[in-house]
Length: 375
Image 1 (cartoon, helix red, strand yellow):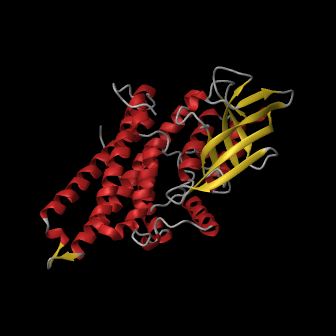
Image 2 (tube, rainbow, N blue to C red):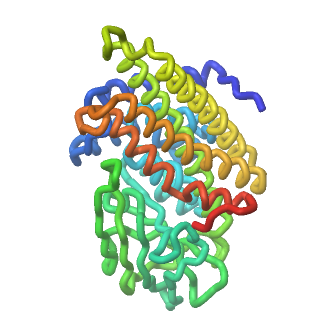
Image 3 (cartoon, rainbow, N blue to C red):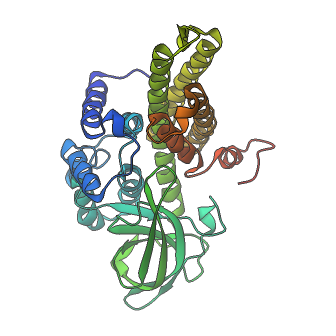
């Protein structure tokens, strides 16, 4: 694989880094956003073209691919920013791109690209953990469309989304169908909450929600493959985000060791701490390489190879992210546990990334690794 970046990639990365440095000051990274901050930053991301990155030019996008999404996600991870970028642009955008008819794409993609609309994907349910394919939410066919009944859990940024892409079974079909549901439609009940890393998610209940026939995305019972591809695209972006977060953690830890003194010498002079920082640097390079491999696999289109490489990258991100985060906190001492120290905020985000969209054990099992623990 060729992991080298061209001039356009470097220009994109630098532009996103400048944006993040301006919108996410270093001393405030990881703090919960106010609604005003979230709206302003989301609008600025739209103006910069980040929200339109993977969409075709006909729908307000720039037609970029998984490599460009990786570069953006890595910089957002470095700044602990991005808001609903993963949920709306990457996951929901990929599903609309794969399953939406031209009319459906014209209806929603330009609004997503411009930042006028946020979307989220409702796949997971109570008791199923990561096995979204076993969804129990039901869609009953009617003369005018369908009626949705069920409950979804951990819908990322579900309380700020205007459009929910909901996986359900039509009249007991074996395969899943996907519906585009207005978040404020009668019968939709959204319970938002803060996640460990200060971001937002929601549990959503659908009680006899009427959806028109034009809200079915793709063919009946055939949404599973597209949902898996969208999840893989999101997992690849998460792996890139974890690399960015670890890069920031490494810089913070190295600076702390250079400036903090003990026994009359900077902590950086102690060989055991030098070795630990070297381990962090090696882990960072591994994460960057696997994030590149995952993004390239997503872009290549070979489903079996994509599944294998994306899951391998997620296993590494889950394991290395946790280990590096704990090491950084330990090397900062007691101050690493305070809200004033940025290290703890990066650690929380890395812990959440490790669990989102499948933990290490689940992805090991998905790869068919013998002896992998159950999810």
